[in-house]
Length: 155
Figure 1: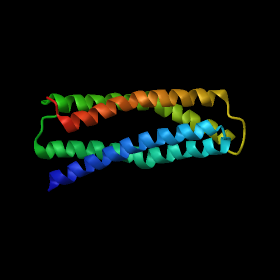
Figure 2 (figure 1 turned 60 degrees about the horizontal axis):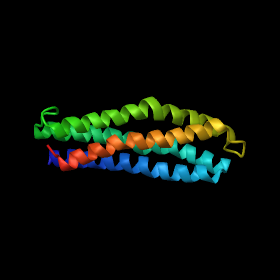
Figure 3 (figure 1 turned 135 degrees about the horizontal axis):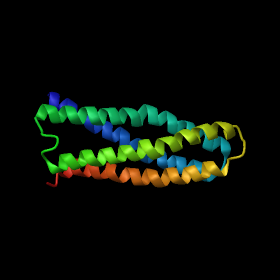
Figure 4 (figure 1 turned 135 degrees about the vertical axis):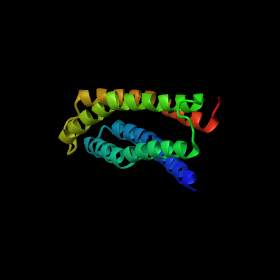
């Protein structure tokens, strides 16, 4: 029963994490394409809100549930290649987010406060948006790889 609970928390976490990062990318891109400062400002506030309420807690549940399930099952975290490489992929994704994407999001949130009520959107915001989506896609690849490794357990 304890293993099932830990596994449920792990899967719930990855659904929250992957669901939020993919959905957020879509609606942020569509908001940016409107070129309407109010819509973009609102979307940028939601990026911050959903990252704290869904992505952050998704990460906590993914890690806590995953390590909990592994501990309960008596798995060697570094003994199976699929388990080792899924952890490596998760860390790579996390580093991309922490080093590149979070600073971009913080910068965008600060800039968006200035134009959210109808002001001019600076070119720096647009450059950051492009970098955010490019690095967001790059950062999602290792996450998808980690999920595949967890499901397929290829070796």
